[in-house]
Length: 339
Image (cartoon, rainbow, N blue to C red; front, side, top):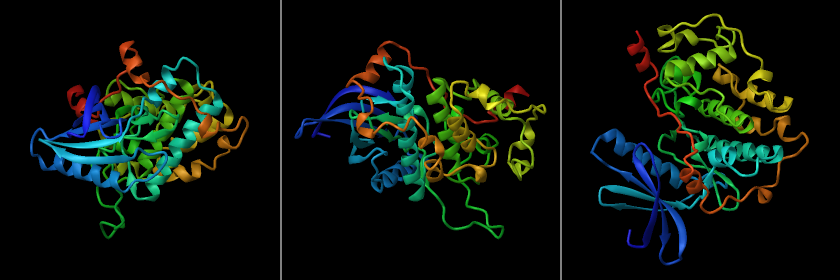
């Protein structure tokens, strides 16, 4: 810790705090994330080890790089490149609106990062604009691996099902429907649902599905995409919480309404990612081949992307504009109170 000088507080997550700091020997500005062990609960400590293990094996232009780590008192400190902004700020609060070419490039960067993670057996499980950082040279990098984990390779039973994961992960607005219904038998396609929500938000300049409660979140998704059926979501009735709430026979809203400012190629891409049945969603590598990225205007080259000011995130906070994303909650905890 003595080799770093802490400058200012940046933000706080579920288990840690992030500070801007300077490496004394090189005068390089870095981000210092402190994972604070407030108690000795095994699940929390395991999550710290899991995050560190995953970060150590990542090497991708579009994923945050771990520069250093060390224990300090009752905390584990992780050192990253300092990122002056994030996708949230660049989409919602930039002085100059993004061009379609720039939007395409952010989408491409996101998908390249997600494709890298999935090809290396990693699911992020909390993709959202606030966890997508923008470097000083304009590159999007996926960050915050506190909920990430390695995919199981082996099968867990005679029926060929996967081993079970933690249910109800990801932040509410970007949570896949199988997670909303309490599934713990999912795969990397829960990240793909989040990617679809993020791409839609880049275009709409607003979250696509923004529920105030978990029940409302599920209701908005069903109202938008229509009530699911066995045809478009096989085995949906086997989901743990499927029978706890019932919806009217809503018909899907047109994508022209859900994405009013999008061109047909973008609507097609988002529609291919936001499908009830996870198996039908495009993979990240498949999505990168979508015609959206090969139609005019072509994506902006990486080196021509906007360079955020060094204090961009701080400027947004000072102006008190940034909307607060919902916290992860028990999906049907609200339902118990409602009933």
